[in-house]
Image (cartoon, one colour):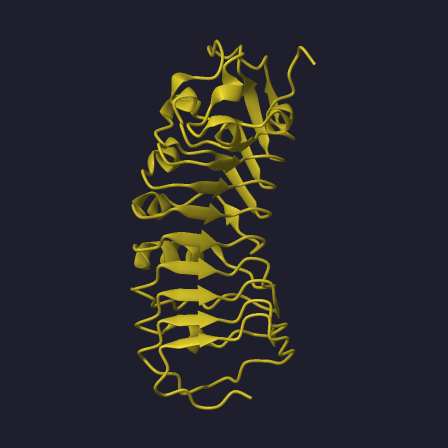
Length: 254
């Protein structure tokens, strides 16, 4: 079904259940701005040309059956939204670095289950427009860098099911727009009432939009402050729900 697309700016085949492979060469318009192939059951290796479309702003390849590595030659200078999560593709560390270095306008990045390894690259902290970061279900390790939690536009951060260790740098948080923070199932340690913390630090307490906070599956302990259920500035619906709080902490009082 894939023919030459020489004049297209938008190509969306999401959920079309194509169950095929992408051709090794395809005459796609250099003006293409959106390419959505999510949930199409595409398989096989991903052609290099997909990552060399100069006008592309949105690329969604999520939830497919591709195989092999994401091409290391990436040139997507105008890219705003990238979803490769659960696509079957793997991303080598040097490709991850190159992507972040050359796609500085990113607003949403989903690399869930892409076999990412190692620590978070410093280039990530230069994405000053980033709103959503999905890196769940990888093999990322090392400590959580405090620079990540000072990106001013972050709304959702999903780092669950990795191998991060050390303390959560709560005291460095400066995330006025944050609504969701998932850090569950890592190797994080520390305490809320210990490790020099007398409770939730003020940086977390003042996150007026925070709605989901999940620290379960770690070694973080301590009692939940009485005001924790009031985090969030939108009334009952905007505050952290009791269920979410129960999942956050292995509280010694439970």
